[in-house]
Image (cartoon, rainbow, N blue to C red; front, side, top):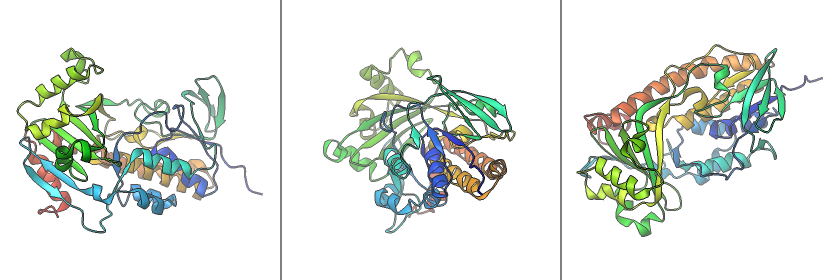
Length: 385
């Protein structure tokens, strides 16, 4: 007679939590995912992700979704361009035919791919975790904002930067990295913004100079998502006396910050469709570790929030989720599985987070773009091919 399977809850329906749920179900382990959003489409999921061969793509392989991912992915999105503030191209990587090391996929497309692979009603939307009450023997009672409670043998915190699970394991809180992104976007870019579309190319373009950068990424359906990146307080808008809903005031402030840059680049600030979104960058301390606690663990940003400049955040979240699920499926004792997973995940994420911090410092350094140029040459080869 098989023992009763453990009751497992995943808090958060992001890439890491959904990957974990998919791999668990694929191995016959029941699981419930709770997310505070009202539905899968309650808000836009953000920009594009490059899924790396040994992390994000390996996780999708474990989930049995590699072929479905390949059908959606954009290998041409692996193109990378580095410019200076005069719009001179310093570096360009154009992917070779058949190159699949890090193809792009929109976050929304990836989420739907993972959601549609799960058993019906796996995800319970509109459930904000208020708190967890330890009951002993590794069990925790989860209390949600509507007042209802459920008890679980294992709670997996996949609930992002401001995790409600993390405080039971760690006193660490995210700190501002000193860098802020301000996001904007361009619809039907090839037809409506052809000069900008040619400047950006098929993948990612970054123009950097002296602590500032303008970054643009191709998304699917002709959309370009762009970011003005700069060092300063997370309260920069308040300090400048502007409200983020005052588009023209924000535009004027950003144009002043990037005064002297080539007009072809400033089009990213002048011609956007819609307004601007403030996205200050936060990170957890490096390394972020915790004492193993039966019945609880973390993955993804809840465990190792880091700068997006390394491109590792979602990739590691998915790998965390897949490997944790495989460990749980392969151990009779869930606590042993979590211990084994944390022993691998924590040092791996510390190394990645350290690299992400260095990449951020390099990209927005006083000598930019020279540091970024050195980094790209090392990544792709001296000639950029």
